[in-house]
Structure formats: C-alpha cells, structure tokens
Length: 389
Image 1: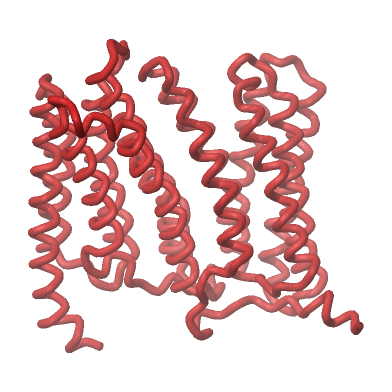
Image 2 (image 1 turned 45 degrees about the vertical axis):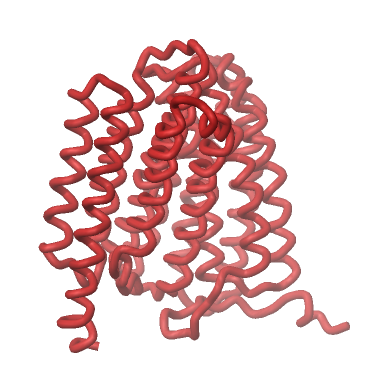
C-alpha cells in the first residue's frame, strides 16, 4: 500500500470550496463533548450561588475552548489522512479525563486536570507542526500558533512543580496565551486567511444543538410534572427551549456572512459564541432546578427562575451583538426590537418575584420576538435580499 494512502498533502481549505458538511469524525467527537457538558450539571445539585456560577462558567469555558481549537483547525486543514484521524480520535481521551478531574479541582487538586490539558495541547502542537512542515503557505500563521501553544504548555508544565495556591494563576496565564495566539497568528498574515464560512457556521450550530439537548433533558427529567397541578410550568419551560432553538436557527439570516479574510468577523464569531452557549446552558440548568423546586423543598441562594430569565435576556443580546457585527444583512427593524426585548427580559427577571408569573412573562416575550422576526425576515427576504442576490 502506498504511503500516500496514509499521509496526504496539507492544504488550507478555501471559502470557495463546495459545501462542506460535518464529517463522521467530527460528529463522533461531538459525542465526547455531549458527555462533557452533561457532566457539569452536578455543580448545581445544591442550588445556585455566585461560587457555583463561576465554577460552572470556568469549567464550561475549558470544554468550549478545547472544542473550538480543534474545530477551527479541522475547518482549515482537515486532510483526512491517518495521522489526522488518529490525532483527533485520541484527543477524546484527555478531554474525558479533564472532565473527570473537575471534582478534584474543586478540592484544590489541579494535577490531573493540568496533565490532561497538556495532552490536549500536545496534540494540537503536533497538528500545527504538520502545517508548518508540510503546508506551502500560511507558515507564519502556523508558527505563531505553535509558539503560543508551546509557551502555554511550558507554563502548565512549570505549574506542576509549584505551590498549589499558585497553580490556578498559571493555568489562567496559559489559557490567556492561547487566546491571544490565534489573534497574533491572523495578524502576521494581515488577516488574509480563507475560511470556509458554511462549514464553520455549521459546526458551531451543531455544538449549539448539543447544548439544546440539555434543555430537552431538563424537560425529560421533570416530565412527571405533567400529571400534577403544576403541569403548566413544565409546558412553559418547554416553550422556552423550543423558542430559543427557533431564534438561533430559523429567524432570518443572522449568520449569513463571509468570514473569509476578515479577522474582525472571525474572532467576533468564534469567540463570541461562548457567551451565547454559556447563557443558553444557564437557562437550561436553572429551568431544571426550578422545576425540581415545584416537586421538592430545594433551597437555592439565587432564584433559578430569575437566573433563567436573566440568562435568556443575555442570550438574546449576545446573539444580536454577534449577528450585527458579522452579518451581511442586519436590518434595524429586526435587531433594534430584539435588543429592547433582551433588556426587557433581564429587567422582568430582576423585578418579578413570583416564579410562575416570571416564567410566563419570559415565554410571552420570546413568542413576541418570534412573531416579530418571522414577519420582519419574511418581508426583508422578499423585498430586499432576493433582489440583491
């Protein structure tokens, strides 16, 4: 068998390539992140507080950040050879290990979490070294990525030998280096890097589907409420879940854009998705706990329904901000009302104390957003977009 069957050329994928669907490998890897995201819910088993919200946010960021880096590399340099496939498949092992070590982190033990994170970095360093060695262009970009990820990894290795009280700061430093490295990598090429927009938008949409699954799970875990006097609370919660799906995926052309060779759009989209994802998860985690409260006498420092309402408003504002920044079409008649409604959701959540009234108010605002956007986007598509296309 020829060597070329095992090792294929590495060449960046262009935005003008034919439509790229998510590969079987990408979909398989996403299963690992399904497990990772679901495992975090136990942080809120005793309710919501400032501390648990911070812990959840940090742990989810690590999951998102690893997924994000592997996803963008695949979108650029997926040559589907044996080395590429093997690298991505084995990346699941340290990811699962990292998630499994979060309980130890909460107790102050960072050793295993650091080791697993280092392994993830080593796989990425190997992948980017292939680009540096074998790709014919964008080597400056690859060199900057490699330098940043290597320095980050050395910082993590050094942290293993330091006092436990200092380790979190080294971990934060290493992640900050990794966040800056892609920006510098794009800057050295003046941002003129092709991006297959359709593929990267689809991949982030699929990750959002993973998170929406948490919303479905929160309904399923409390489905017995349908046969109680509080059945309408479950129905209202379900309406929240499907409304958020509709707003993200089907209200117009919010992500109709061209990310290729545009550094501002790339990082607004790629990094900004974190705030959409995190707010979405807080909605579902809070709804699940809030539904439990109607069954059991559960205590929570922060009212979960209030948190769900605030998170819904943040989701609306984050989504709108990103779409306004990157999209080809951003009519004021769509985004100005949505921004107002997002702020309204936050205010309602802060001032309405009754849980049922608040949940009904959130659903009402979401339905108003849906009706307004369906009508507005239909008009905009018929009278403007089709004429421009």
